[in-house]
Amino acid sequence: MRGTSWIRDPSLAEVGERRIEWTKNFTPVLMRILERFRREKPLNGVRIGACLHVTTETAILVEVLEEGGAEVSICASNPMSTQDDVAAALAARGTRVYAFRGQTTREYYECIGHVLADEPQITIDDGADLISTIHKLYYGIESEELKYVRPIIGDLDVRELLGRMIGGCEETTTGVLRLRALARDGKLLYPVIAVNDAESKKLFDNPIGTGQSALDGVIRATGMLLAGRDVVVVGYGNVGSGIAQRLRGMGARVTVVEANPIRALRALMEGFAVESMKKAAAHGELFITATGNISVIRREHFKLMRDGAILANAGHFDVEIDKRDLEAMSIKRERILPCIDMYVLEDGRRLYLLGEGRLVNLVCAEGHPSDVMDMSFSLQALSAEYLARNRGKLPIDVLNVPRELDELVAKLKLESMGAEVEELTPEQINYLRSWEPGSK
Ligand code: ADE
Image 1 (cartoon, helix red, strand yellow):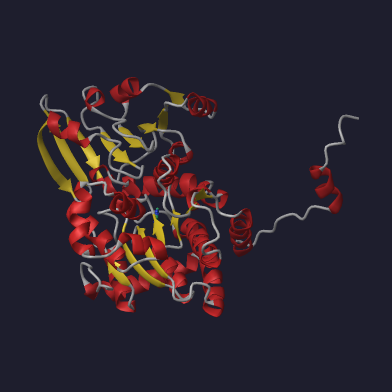
Image 2 (cartoon, protein in one colour):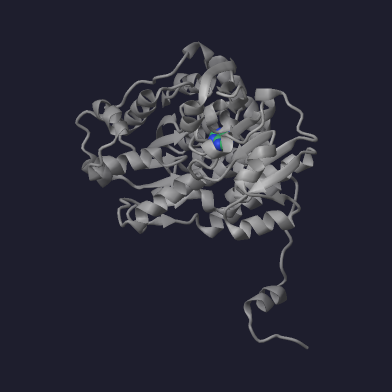
């Protein structure tokens, strides 16, 4: 049974619609794909369940999929990231939307339940919560979340759902890691495309998109000047490196904390101070985590921090800054501004946590700039099309975005920006393919 939308405030639809229209100025590649989808209808009759941050860019992706003939149901991929005006605009257009900002855990999973009740044939995730719920239902892995999902899906038969399933797409690093763990355990139940791993995604969205939007979140929440600040970036992967570089560009004094020796060496050779978390904890004024790991800032580090230290997270889940430790060590917690919680420790020191330790770019700002989401979501649309066109033919595994789609997105983006790629001569192509030529 297909449900009706569950959103915060339908009266926000017009504002949402205006913002979505504005965003289209910055998503030329998605608009090209939309035109083709409108003509070709590659997703005709396919039901898509999306679990994504509900933003203006996501609304455009939904529009592209719907123009391609899909029926889309969407829930949020984070309890705090939904833009309520966008949710309202989508609902007014007739998309089934189960998302609002400030969900409890129960509501978050109930919304996932609603998307499942709409019986998706393609899942699109950002963080793998939708697909992992399907897997938990199938394998009977009891969890708190399933307690909330079950009453919503009623007598939905998960085997039948899986029988009609075409495939899935995953947007982010954390989600891909979860899916690879499922595949490694031999438990993955349908093919999933790791959109995150496409080059036209991970080389741009992760460092450049998060690099800018995480700082946007910190600045909007605090209004602080970054120049001259002692900032500690925890994690120097695709995301952390982008944040550290942009911080440096704004004049911050940046220290990197990294557990992987190769990444740590890269950070050092790219000019950053590299320290242990304990050492960095004692001097940082602002901390930004981007590791994808749990409790990277915890009790032993909070103990060392200076009064007034600010903590923000740019990783997918709110587990990187250990909130339980912070709460246990505090005599008082107060929301002093919409995006700032003040924790007062026993000795009187104050630590400030931004956006509840959830994705600072989406909770305290509006996520990545549209120009970057243009590429990521073009890959999502093309991957959904690829799944539909290859229905029943793909292996059950975590699959790469086909190279030609990855390059197509880069080419279309370049074209939209007025740039050209160089054509290789036949002689050059041949040279690159042969092993005979050597030293002369
Ligand atoms: N993830 C990061 N930024 C985003 C955005 N603007 N829209 C959707 N998902 C995002």
